[in-house]
Image (cartoon, rainbow, N blue to C red; front, side):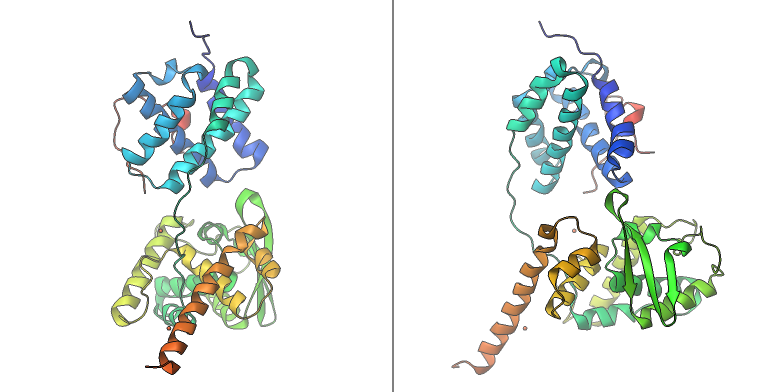
Length: 343
């Protein structure tokens, strides 16, 4: 007979809504991702094991169940290996927390979770813009009217700063400091880590002009970029802007923009790659991007090698013998606890 552990949901609630945001300092996006993982777990347990959310015990989460859940995520949900590994990471993090809260009940869960390996995935090349493509993209929005001026400034600032989309959304007037012709931005990255990034004169002038046009001078708490309906711009709005202008760019320049689907993160990848190609030390790029580990920055060396291979191939041909699931959140036949819903 299994030992009853009715505190599973209570422990999960504390983990997601207290421990992660306040003790760990996890970003809202990380908490949102973890909640999504556990909503899937609850759905799986209900559909495959016939266990309702309020009946789940730590003992139900054994090695075989965890493996089957991850397989279900891939096969039934159609998720990528990367997403599968993210779900496992969420389970692993929670199992460590649960074991500290209730050693007797959660130890088996913790041990079995640690036995499950991450799955290796094929390396994907990151979509990046060439310098020519960046120039085309930044000049597509007309610097006229509120929307055109905003989009032109936003794209320029993203390239100049290498900022993540969320960092651009969170940028406030107080975070912008002008010093003569130049400017510096204070960006708040993952885990609340802050860094200051200088941007070049051209972008600084464009940003200063935009702030003045919007009447934001001296309004320190206002966000620099807003949507057409809200003072705070969501990441989805930036994604729509990128989709719009990369689509236009492909139509106008069919011989360029050939790396598939570009996302806001493509701009961050691009500036890092261009800096590395220009000889900027990788340690400097690491700090510029706000990476915690140099290993995260090292991927751009691989991208640069790909660029090098293209040039070598073009040279040889000339002089030889003969250059980003939204998960389906359709209604389920089980009730999701309120604390697992995105707020």
